[in-house]
Length: 353
Ligand code: ATP
Image 1 (cartoon, rainbow, N blue to C red):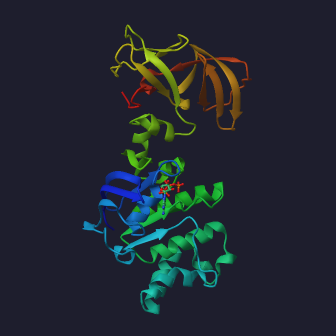
Image 2 (cartoon, protein in one colour; image 1 turned 180 degrees about the horizontal axis):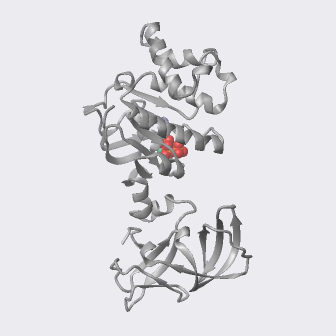
Image 3 (tube, protein in one colour; image 1 turned 30 degrees about the horizontal axis):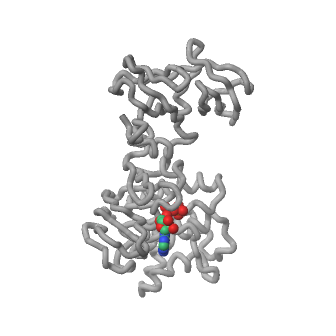
């Protein structure tokens, strides 16, 4: 186990800057997930930590040691990729032990290390099988087993679940989380799936275009997104963002373009007349017979909840009700918003007010 530090790390491919000054610390034993849209630099950052890419500027430290010039083999890390790349002609046991064999670890010791890893991963009965005789989830577990037997200081995962079907992904999410709780090894994990990040991470690093937008515990990011980008990225369905103007006379009211009034939290000092984005999560809009009138556009019942797209003051909003609702397109609903649930952003800077 080891802490990891990124200190003003930069990376350019040719003259194109890709990572533009990234600094953050990962504590010993922490499970940190890097998320962000495609191309934001998550994989590049992970590959720099692994030693598979040079660092243009800044420092990366593992266990307090600067590793900028250290070859991958000496960094004491193990990486699990999206395509697990198992050797087809080797059994599960041979695949798991292969890197140890390459490092001249005696066969008896390899066996001693493969067994407990296989036990943790539920692979004991499959050790003599070949990869073609395994399901996708079992192959992914072998890939993790191959990393575990090396007992590294840090595990790096690069979208390890994206080749699996939805059901298996949910199962593997729980397994990886449990694995981390047992091994307590530092994990740096890349995904573009914010649900994966929310459910597994101790802390999430939200990246965009080579910079870090925000770092925090999953619910911290959910409850207090620092800016419009994080607010829109974390949460599914996404937060409703409504262009408004804080009422000129103050009074904790935001006005939509058509004059519809929305309640603002008293605790947030929004300057009167300021152009804002009014953010409210779909599940924070409640049915309220005294509330605002909205017109239903589409309903999507999922069984446990009802998702509704509706028009509010000329804008479409998405709402999620944790109940069954017998409504049809064209129906009117009345809804209320608790001001304490509202997120307010400066429309010009995109920053949270
Ligand atoms: P994804 O979720 O799609 O995997 P990502 O956030 O992991 O995206 P990276 O793979 O780190 O993104 O790529 C970041 C940017 O760097 C992209 O614009 C990509 O085209 C560019 N890039 C990555 N590797 C190279 C390379 N070897 N040469 C030139 N450009 C590269």
